[in-house]
Image (cartoon, rainbow, N blue to C red):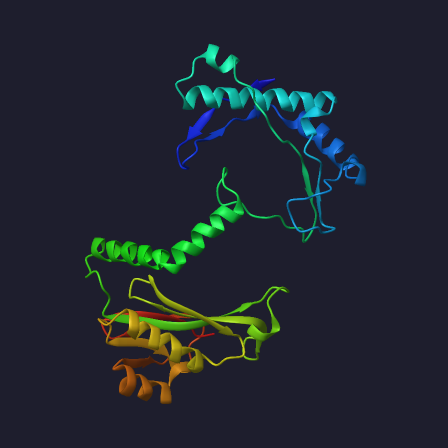
Length: 290
């Protein structure tokens, strides 16, 4: 058994170590056969960390206690890698390391079609802790404020002012998953798609400014009312908005009278097929004409 050099990545608050077993084909085959053979109620975790489902099997947390040679080979490699990670990431000596005791819970999953598992956003953080932080940050609008600052830096780096003065709006229908509630989903007859519609506003560089989500059955102009209202609320510097022909009509008049936004409709030619770049004042707008 030969292992590649251990690498440490300081991308998390807790260092992330990576070690590869070379070669690993034989061990993988033996472990796969063993795990599939042990996919039984006898070895199933009675208190799984995910919502019980037929497509997901989680074993008991005693994998490294199994006497099979392939499991013990995996155990030795992993514990050796952990020990090397501790040595490289700390000031401990080999003597200090020898006095440490490593406690671990080890198990395996078998995930079949449509099975899913709780996502972890950090190798040393539980989902509940991450969720609590995200909720706290969202209440203070930190994600949006961070996005605003990054957008401003990108614009300055591209030779533009920090705050945009013009925007482009559009909408896209996205197929909804089976878990999407019926009250927030709809059917877009034009796109022949059931799901939701995202209405977005970007600056001239394509950087996201505002996004709203509606049922797919909602018309583009209906979704644009709230989108433009949010755009005006968050960006007082914007005075011009480009949109395609689907937004023509009363929306243009409403935006001018109520929001003091000039919505310019960029019309495409029905006689041209394919992907066409259309002029939009001092910028350009790209549309699919087919």
